[in-house]
Amino acid sequence: MASVRGQCQTETGCKAEGMDDSAEKVTLLRNLSTGREALIWKLDGLSECDVRRPMVPTGTNLLGLIKHVASLEAGYLGRFRRPASR
Image 1 (cartoon, rainbow, N blue to C red):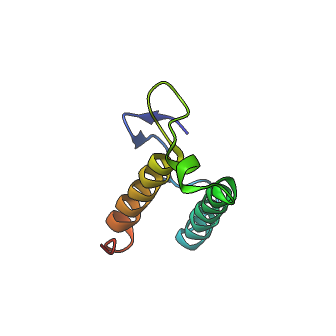
Image 2 (image 1 turned 60 degrees about the horizontal axis):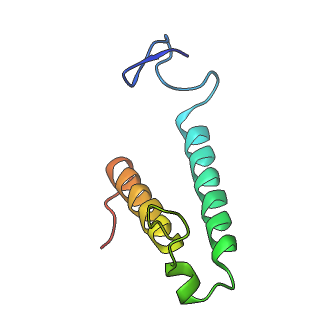
Image 3 (image 1 turned 180 degrees about the vertical axis):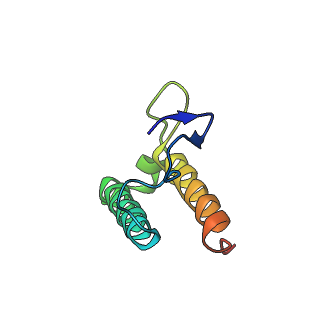
C-alpha cells in the first residue's frame, strides 16, 4: 500500500485487505496490550532510583519513556476512541 504524506493510495483506503473495523480494533488493542506488558516487565523489580537514572547521553530514563508512551497512547486513543481521563 503506497502512502503519500499520510494518505493511502488504494481503492480500500488505509485498511488492510480483508480487515473490517472490528478486526483492526482487536489487532490494535492486542498490540497495545503486548507493548504495555513488555514495558511493565522491563520495569519490574527496579528501584525508583533505577527508573529515574539517565542511561544514555541525552538524559532519557525509563520513567520518561513510560510517560512518553502513555501520553502518545492517551492522545491517540482520546482522539479516535474516547477522551483521555486526566
